[in-house]
Image 1 (cartoon, rainbow, N blue to C red):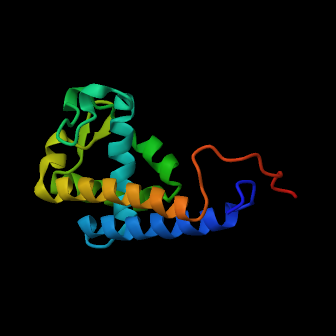
Image 2 (image 1 turned 30 degrees about the vertical axis):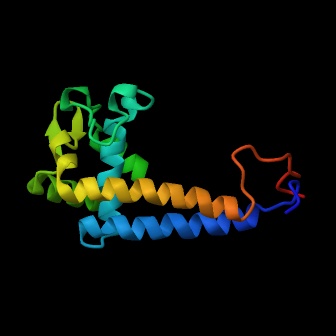
Length: 155
């Protein structure tokens, strides 16, 4: 394939297909509810944002401590998701009742213990494998991490 070829549509199509397949798969942790996955994942990813790049927590079994979690406020969660508050709040309350989300001073956290369950560990391994698969699928349609200079979108 010509290195300068405009492959953006193929990359977009392939990436979208792979990402949606992964979302459907991970929603199985939430009874197939993709919106529940979105709420839960938005919370725990915000909790660990401060750990990005921290080698102490890079390994699969090196889950960050609860005391290091950045609580996410309800307002920030609603804004991040962009859905009506009553819908988001219903999911949050359900997660709290299940014990997978806790309300702490400053907001919401997903306790570290949640991520050590066999189901969550299996999901983490699967997600890693899916990221690798996404990389392979994108490479197969000509995507490289360093893209060649392409014409502007209006061209």
